[in-house]
Length: 200
Image (cartoon, rainbow, N blue to C red; front, side, top):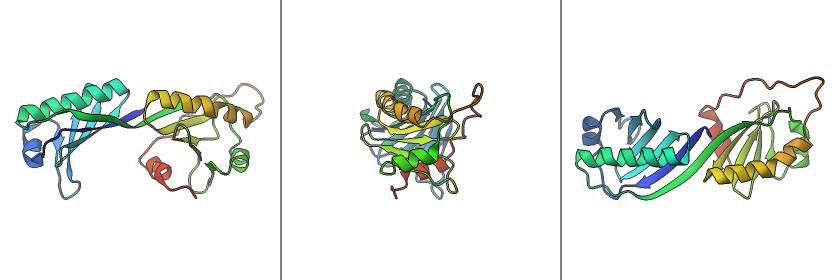
C-alpha cells in the first residue's frame, strides 16, 4: 500500500488563520489553497483542514495509520481551542503497487477487453483497466508492474487483484531466460489526472 486517503468531519467551523499560527508544522496560504496543510512525522501523513471543519488525511500507508493520524490532528485542533468532534471517518481511496513478475502484452489486452480497458501509449505508458466490482482502476504497465487505485479498503484492493491477475496472466509475454522487471514507474500527481479522466 502506497497511500491511504481518508476524510473526517470535526463538526465545527474553524478559524484557519488562528489554526495555522498556533499549530506546529502548519502552512496556510489562502491565495494558493483554501485549507491549512498540516504534517505529522509519526504516522507520516498530511492533513488538509478546511474552514467547514472537514479534514482530509493523505499519505498514510495503512488504514490504521490514517485513522491514528486523523485522531492526532483532531486532538491538536482541539488543544488550540476548537470544540471538535471526531465523526464520519471514512476511507476515500487506497492506492497500492504490485509487480506480477512477468511482462504483459498491453495492446492485445486492450483489444480483447476494450469495454473496460483503454491504452493510448502516446498519452500515457500504462493501460487503464476499470474494474466494476469492486470499483477500482488498475494501471497496468508492460513491465508487469501495476498500480491499483480507487478502492475504499485494503480488502477491496485484494479482491480487485484476485480478479485481474488471471487476465494479466492470460496476456503475459513469453520471455527467453529469467525476467527482471525494470524499476517501478514513478507515481506522481499526473496519474490522478489519468485515473479520474472519464472513460472514452
